[in-house]
Amino acid sequence: VIDKIKAGLEGELPGVRAWAKMTVRAVDNEKENLQILNDWLSKEKLDALRDAAILIALFEKDGEYCFPMIKRPENVKNHPGQIALPGGSKEEEESLEETALREAQEEIGVDPDKIEIIGKLTPIPVPVSGYLVQTYVGVMDEEPEWKLSENEVADFFVLKVSELLDSDKDYYETWDLRGFEAKVPIFKVGDLKIWGATASVL
Image (tube, rainbow, N blue to C red; front, side, top):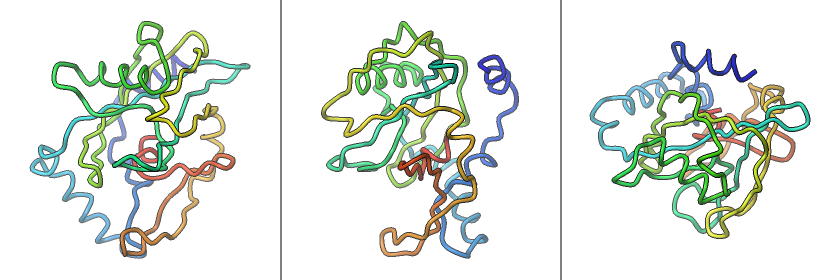
């Protein structure tokens, strides 16, 4: 499994084609959706975004590959209450890979020395919070002892890769977001609803 993931990460990434499917959009207005998306991919808009990084930390458990996710607290500024991958904004003196590893250690206790980064995905712009997010994929030899940050983690989940693959890829809900009706694509895994930038990454 890991060899296949490595091979996929080393090849040409699908980029926009992959994450645009899970992007929140105006209902029944695909032309406007595409225009908005292309606008955010302009060099001017991308240059204005701050750098951030997140981590998909894979490990094998009971014969299946899994990865950790968190629920963000309701009192944080960006993406309150959402299901997310561990990560955060880049500090001045570090690389984006170092950002992903540092944030995973701070939020859920992953030891950077015990994870091998095997590749990265296409960066994704997140206009609502003003970040350009780089996703790194890493592998651990075993499930670590999780140490959760009280300030940054409201809840914690370990998802099987198979659960994500088996979820309904065409499921969506219609929500009122900031006063406009939006079509929100969602990965439903058990009671979890994964949407927004995290769904686009996955």
